[in-house]
Image 1: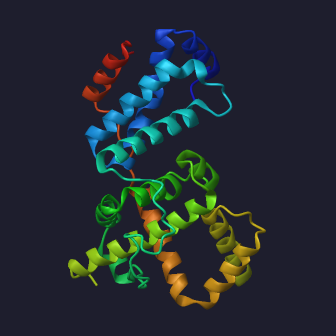
Image 2: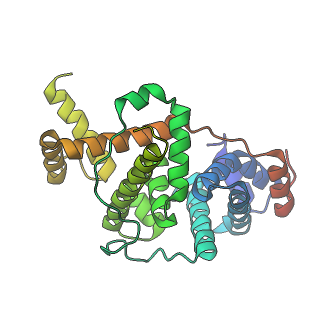
Image 3: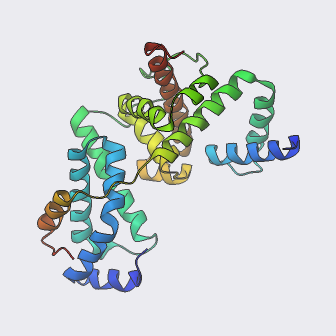
Length: 194
Length: 80
């Protein structure tokens, strides 16, 4: 949070350009990184960044201060990212993930990270595999995994951001984790590591 | 670590993960189940490990200069 943030927000609401600039400077790294995590590429992350702050500049007068400005921006950015995913891949977030035929559901084959791999691979190498696995996840599942497990949002906040029920968040998260784990196992097998 | 302490920490972690209250009956049920089911324990541990790796290797990136210039330009604001 910025020093004197309330004062800066109040000035920004009155259209003060310097105050708006200060808010953009302060919050743009966080929003850019959120965009990168959700969109997985720089171009789309930049679009999320621009659209989020365009909304902030034009709508800050509607910010009531019930949550922090960061939470408000975070929600705007997440919704912008989801909108982009829908446009790009025609995904439907209302698709029922409770449907047993949901395409991302694989087997429940057990997988663990073998101990010898923990010694053999550095965290950065693990990260490389994990990044690839996350990138290949269906956007529905990736968004849930990132918002809940990576960003650390609560179940209720994630539900509110995505406009779905808490139980739906839990179901989707479980499926995201299962799907991710299976992809991870597949890479290790393909690389001959297990 | 004592068994009791381990169970409590596991329970806390599971409740956080599931977004349930610490005293929710389902948390007790899952902790008890994990202690008796190696397959689910392996699943739980591997997910925990994946998330941990992701978080410790996550490097916050600065906004590239050109991206920042374009942002301020489109917003019609002056960069500090």
